[in-house]
Image 1 (cartoon, rainbow, N blue to C red):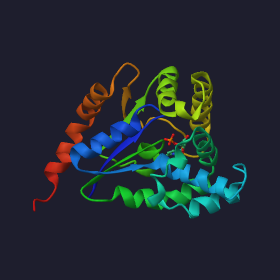
Image 2: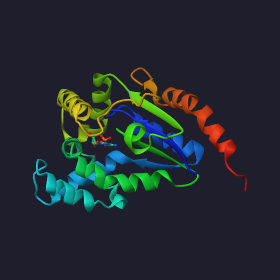
Image 3: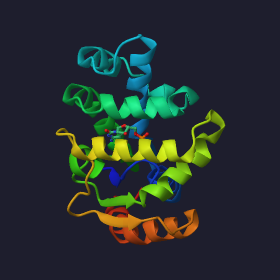
Length: 216
Ligand code: DC
């Protein structure tokens, strides 16, 4: 039985960094599920299709190659926005479900980060974090990553707020904390103190599961 840590939260909350560090700490696999939705968006753009065209988005979702998750082409502001648009379609979400479920079963454990990991993909996760930060703080962090592409911090703040609104209000798997998630606000925390808080929150549950693993 694999041990799952679910890390959810809005754009640029720090969830990806924390998920990666938790995975390294416990020797678990890590999956950035946002990259899958970004790959759907890239597929739609490459096909010259409209993000409002659900069948085209589904076709792109069925063709997603997770091995392309490291492609820098998915890390742009436009692809982030289109990813949020195509992720409202239940058909697109369903097409990505099995890959995420089988990833979560990897031994000895897996850390998945996204929007619906603790609520839909892995509701049985051993530990759940919901990472958040004030929109202005998140926009500033995203601007530091994207400034070479030219957008201003204000443009990014508008984008972050629009994405929050879309991700939280959609009918299918909206962004919201699972009832049993630990809420971690990273607004006033640098990476190391945020990681220490995340580790503190998940450690008891994960260590208990690790102890219960058969020796060998
Ligand atoms: O985490 P990110 O910014 O790379 O995610 C891009 C978009 O993908 C996000 O705005 C909504 C969608 N997404 C989702 O609906 N469910 C997930 N588990 C992960 C991302």
